[in-house]
Length: 128
Image: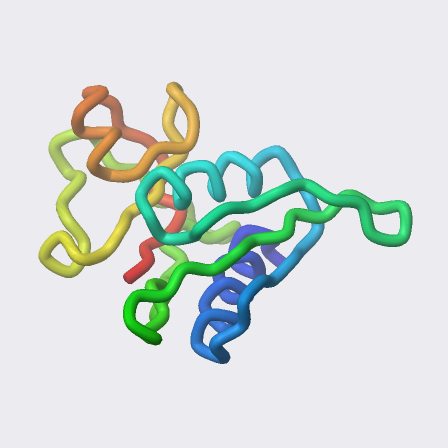
């Protein structure tokens, strides 16, 4: 299975179930993605912890007036089909109410940051 897909689906399902926190296995890529989500205001905070001798990422979810901030997630690049965007192909998601996360030469960036930095990259997923 795809670990990034599992992570975003776990975030979506936990927020729709009104959970306070969720956790999943640690990786540097997931850590960088969560850093981007925190910067864009989609999660409260996250931390690296150890459970049963294995490192895990524990995420505190964000809600606005009892409504979850993350209600839907869509994986853009898959293992079978990679999707790349140049800087001029990056557009807003859901008229600015969503978020596009890209893997760029400057690290994991949101669509807004990638346009600001003038870089393109592989589109990982969309959230709204």
